[in-house]
Image (tube, rainbow, N blue to C red):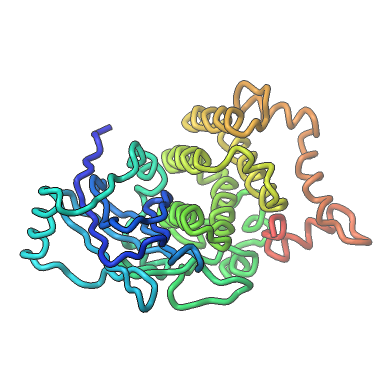
Length: 357
């Protein structure tokens, strides 16, 4: 891999002492002399801010050019970053000269963090931001609570039960809403586009603490991991998914699967099991599945004692029987007066997504 080139400068003017400022999920409380950052890698970065730690975090995506200078100004009246003004050549040269001369108090970009950020965010591009209602140099919030929406916040691709039902069209309901989610994903958007949105949702969750972004990330992870047919057709895409999930979960705390998120935890745990079950028997994905399992074992203590993803899948099949795992899952959704077959038929007709909602 080519070495990263940390060449860009970020100059931030008019900041207030004590305000919270961050870049790429690293956060500081600013002192009186802070004027920006140096040694920033080329590409997209996510700045975060909160005035005095009182208000919730907001974010701004910026696009740094190698050797360039990016400027943001703290708008005291509106309490947000403003990067709309374009630097003239003379202004840029002046800032560069001041930085080289040591006239600006610039902090270094967090040491060794460039590769970490690249691992979780390198696939995100400007087109992805635009699809999700975000713009470069425009501040945005984490997303509304209880369905409330503002103008300056992400808009995620609907992947809920009702959205999938609308997309089904003339496709047979049983196959469309069955265990293999390939048709559902293909009916939603190109897999490569949704993979970029998955990456964006995670960094917005990580940086802004957005519950809405967390839920979108979980939904997309679950959707991808259930795509048995697509895994066979596009193994390289799912090798990238395994690498991305490993990089993302490396930033999660060790008690992530024991925290108080409850049902949300189960969604992600079930998604990973789907990935192992669907990938373990595919030669081009077995190594990726084994690597993801080994990481989950070491980081979170999950599924200890299994030497490979295929061994884990075989052990679960032996414990429950060939169809036992699916029956245990269905029992959670059986209503009074229903048997398992009736429950399955109702869930299929409802759109299948009820398993995780």
